[in-house]
Structures are given as C-alpha cells and as structure tokens.
Image 1 (cartoon, rainbow, N blue to C red):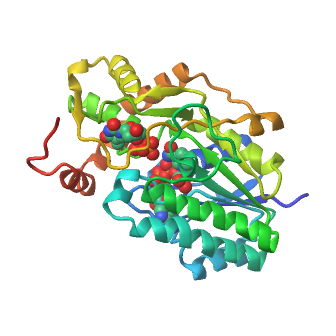
Image 2: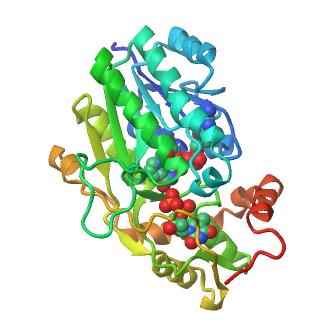
Length: 342
Ligand code: NAD
Ligand code: TYD
C-alpha cells in the first residue's frame, strides 16, 4: 500500500486554512494533515472541531517563526507538501502596527523555507495575495506585472512571496506561489468587510463604509480558492506564480447593499466613515494562466454569497464571542470616542 500523503498546513486554524483542511478531508480518504497554528486572535480551533476525533488530523499550537517546532514537525511527520497560510492578514491592523506582519509574513516564510531546504518536500506552496501588485485603475494584473504593494500588510506579503521564489531560484526548492483575490465564505474573522457587515447588520449596528464606498474588490469564494490551490499544487510548474481571481469585481457600496438585502436590513445602517489611509483603489487579476492548466471555478457569485450570508445567520454561536473582548478593544482604538464619522 502506498504511503498516505502528509500535508503540513500552517495557519490552518484561520479562515482559508481551515476551509482548505475541510476540503482536503472531503476530497481524499488517505491523507494526513498537520496543522501548525499559533492561534493569534484570528486562529480558532473551533473551525475544525468536526475533525477532533480523526486520527489523521494533528493540531500543533506553534509559531512558524520557531525553527525548533518547525524542524520537529519535519522530522516526525516527514511531510510531502507544505501550504503556508499562516500570516497576519488584516490591512487595517498593519496600518496600526506592522511588527507582527513583518515577523510572520516575512521571517516566518524564511523559517519554513530553511526547514524545507534541510529536510526536503515535494511541494512548498506559498499563499500570497493579489494585494502585492498594488492598485490598478483599469485592466488586470498578470503574473508578470511589477509588484507595488501599498500598505505594510501587502509589503510584508510581497517579501514572503519573493523570498519563496528566491529559494526556488537559488536552491531549487519546489516552490509554487499563488496570488488570490479577496475571499469570502464561512469562518472568516468578523473584521473583514463581508463578515463584519453581515454580523453588524444582524445586530442592527452601523456598517462603517470607508470613504465614498467606490473602491473595487474582486470576490473569490473560499471553496473555489481551495480547489485552485490544490490544482496549482498538483499541476503547477515549479517556481511559477498563479493568480486566482474571483471574477466578481464590485464596488464596496454594491456589496454592502447586497448584504443588507440578503439580511433583510435597511440601507440606513450604512455609515460612511473616514477613509483607510493609503487605501488601494482597485484590485483585479488576469487568471488565464491557471485556467490554461484546466482549473475552473465551481460556484456562481450570487449562490455563494447567499450561502455565506446564510452561514453567518445560522452560526451566531461561532461569531458572537469573537465580537467581544479583544475585538471590541481593537475597534474602540480604531474608532475612539469623538472620531468624526463623515
Ligand atoms: P486569517 O487571519 O483568518 O488566518 C491566519 C491564521 O494564521 C490564523 O489561524 C493565525 O492564528 C495563524 N497565524 C498567524 N501568525 C502565525 C504564526 N506566526 N505562526 C503560526 N500561525 C500563525 O487569514 P486568512 O484570511 O485565512 O488568510 C490566509 C492566507 O491567505 C494569508 O497568508 C493571507 O495573506 C492569504 N490571502 C488571504 C485572502 C483573503 O481574502 N482573506 C486573499 C488572498 C490571500
Ligand atoms: P477588507 O475585507 O479589509 O479586505 P482588503 O482591505 O484586504 O481588501 O476590506 C475590503 C474592502 O472593504 C476594502 O476596500 C476596505 C473596505 N472596508 C470598509 O469599507 N469598511 C470596513 O469596515 C472594512 C473592514 C473594509
């Protein structure tokens, strides 16, 4: 019998990582998954509670910047694949304080690459982001477009992205890099636009829309993102970058109105607030490269967004505790008493 493939998923207790682990177990019977996650505010082991009794799922609380624990995992589990989701991921937090972003999103990638150099792997997938290209007025970025990150989050992700490439170029490590657009779906921490606005609407709280609400994002359903990552892992060429687009570009105001419609709430809940500093205007990706390999999305935006909004409406127990404590302290800092709401 052939050996079970072993996946190390870093940051697997977060939004996309946990969806990816669920996807792996739904797709394959014979695999083992090691989830290395530091459990920052964004990591929630509850996202994977259904796997608690699965002997092929191992959760390890730890930091990707800690070479000791990373090396131990390579020695003990001899992984075939490593998919690095672990990151500080929220632009607004990076504007407040970038230190953790530089540490995890750059130095953490270095630690994982060094372990890969030492022990070997079949594939190292660096989960990057469309934000590394910066903003685009018209047209779409291809994988050849120059990187012009515009905030500390996207700059640190660019560092990790290019460091991963450099280990392919210099040491021939089997690296593939993916750059996806804005994801939505279940288990997303309610600080990002869609879960924040859905849950605020449910609580009849204002939806703080930055600036004029005309910034454009391209929305990708997280389950399509998962199939794209797996496709790139299995079919991608080493050393290459693959864009993963949602194909659903929308102004923030449009998606905000759609959320209010789907939650049955009034547009008077929309609260225009001061713009994010350095706010990227529009993200847009050309994804013909991955599509030419044969990957395609399985979900239509309208069905997936309805399902997503429905998930948050049904799972108050999941998000309610996240909107208290540390979360509220953060929001109080972001919008202190007396903040002028335009
Ligand atoms: P998230 O913030 O929901 O989850 C990040 C996870 O990483 C958390 O579980 C956290 O505990 C863990 N983590 C943070 N620092 C760590 C460290 N030092 N060591 C180990 N674990 C650590 O993020 P997400 O939205 O799921 O994003 C996952 C990845 O996908 C990130 O690399 C992000 O840059 C990228 N990405 C996200 C989007 C999006 O729209 N969310 C789009 C494109 C790319
Ligand atoms: P976000 O979900 O933070 O993702 P990113 O900044 O990585 O694209 O934000 C998506 C868009 O929504 C972005 O243009 C900023 C805007 N936004 C608001 O208008 N209000 C908010 O409270 C948040 C969190 C985001």
